[in-house]
Length: 562
Image 1 (cartoon, rainbow, N blue to C red):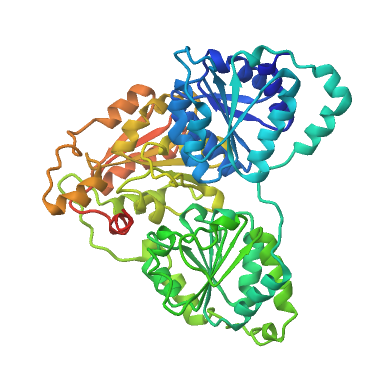
Image 2 (cartoon, rainbow, N blue to C red):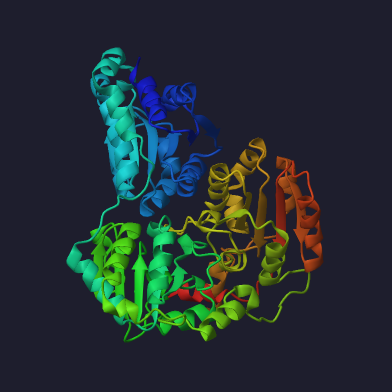
């Protein structure tokens, strides 16, 4: 067995079931080996799309994402998707051929490319090391939650792997040891730090928990601790849906927060960030943290503590394990006994009533600005929220429009929202939706895109059709890069570089095999209702001509960080 075949077989043996990619000569054999040993290959039309699909698949499935690309341009094409995954600490392996001869047209410094975006560059160096080096790459991805670029030099790919002997000696044991689901280790902070957290929780009268991506596995533990301390529950955008169904769920903190959520978080005397960066997006540049609020952060990565906001207490540990241990510490104090009534901490009948009445964006009143054959994006999104099945998985691209689907489309839980925004690149939304859809085939996939992002990712329209995904793709079309229009336009700058003539996106999608409906007013959503009745044998493009007179207020927040 040659190295290329062995790498594919090892990854399949440790549980890899899906690989995304674009196949060229340098990754042909490793991809076929994965397929031969049971993995599904999902062909993208562009390597950037393949990388983002693998990223989204990993986020929504809890497994290690795998993307396979050609050496040189295959890797450079994928770099934006790799950068997003690396910044998000997505457990992912990029399998890439490598031309080590500097005379080759395909030669680039692939280690430097990977390191430049925060990925971990690794390499298979010889047939005798191939199994161990592949397992090391998997371990770095799965256990350390890193995005790994595993280089497969073209000459090394042809080396012979002593497979038969390895099986007899240690391969079975090594593979068994690597059968891990990507996720955090169950580490806990030192007892003294747990006691300090327990004291702060016991003394707090208005605690709020903000859970991020690092807490998506810890709902039960956080809800139990919150119930014991009277804490309200919120999330960062990437963890949207985590506390869905709880009467104390404030939904998303930060730029997408409802007015009520912003008020209650700002008035907290204690905010605990669980697996959450507490960055400018989640805290509105710190304005959601009150002047006298005590701020605590729990994270697996010590280097993440206090990076964006100074914290009074930083704890290194798994969020679920830390919450569970803190509850035990709290239970041993007399302070817990004094909070045992039906109303304690931040939890009162008045607050519960306000959350019921004001806790969703759909309940926030607004003046509809539609007209002139353009629909208000709030009206559009509320209408879609009412029409689409509750069991959905929503992926959102970046841009001026992005808050509308993020705020007005409800999701059933944390596995219903996929938000690839760590790098803030537009054009990733459709590929995100494809990866998420394959991870959760039991749910209706919904991709929310701007017209700029839709046209950037348009190659993957064919992929959606080819895979037979019953996807709803909503394009919020303002015929511009709206973020730039509303950032620079008010200052009198010329906007010819960021505005465009109308494009018939419905016709383009129809040519790729979609059903399509153009929406200029609420009545046009009847076309969506008809598609939902079935048979849903083609994906649906909703080409929404949205109002464009003003920018979104969360965009104003975002530009304060530029």
